[in-house]
Length: 304
Image 1: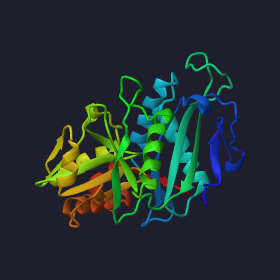
Image 2 (image 1 turned 30 degrees about the vertical axis):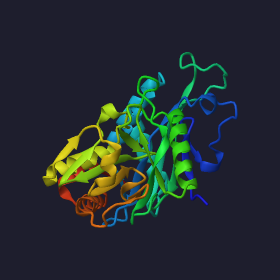
Image 3 (image 1 turned 90 degrees about the vertical axis):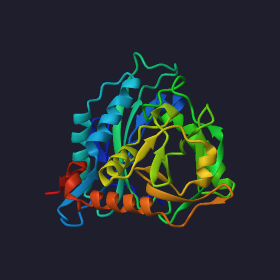
């Protein structure tokens, strides 16, 4: 049972969530011609009169850039204003997730992006832990991550998520929690909806953008935190075999936050995860506005 927030933004106005409906003939439904974002919010533990959103500006920038692939001009600052009002109208009482979505809203049948109506909506859902904070098991997917030359992986395009869906279901139905996808060159790319990091000899190693990964905002945050904490970071291609001998492996994403990996295929990862835990504790403190060094990442939305 999903607990959706009561108010949505739909067709340029705020309406009850139950009334925010699209036609079965909607273009984006048929062709995946949409892009989405996802960001988390929590009631401020220190101030019940405001809500905290994590890196609202970066999420809006990324979705605005994704919209450009759809030939849709949606400024990031306008999106930020709408999301802020959305939060104020809903007044959530617990941890939640916001889904802003741009799409081709026309009812035509031709797969195209020109001369077609586009639209934008926002809804939210109460959300605690997406993956177990104790750790997850992963399998190597038989499905391959797409290449940027066949679809714009610098955007969070909805049609691309058929591969993620296939990989996730394959993993769960074969007894694992999550999937790790390789790219067309046979290197590690990402999980079904998260970026991946390994730790070896005190260094954090993660696939770079050239490995067909999503430009994750949580990933970007982790790289900055590691730099500030003095933890060496290397962005480079990662071999499959490195996963099995890593000292630590973890996934990152808005929904997943920082989730440790406890098993990959038939290899059990070490139970001691000092770097993963250090980063996770730091990120938690930041999202709860308990770290003054990163206050610029936290957007307080007043409810008064």
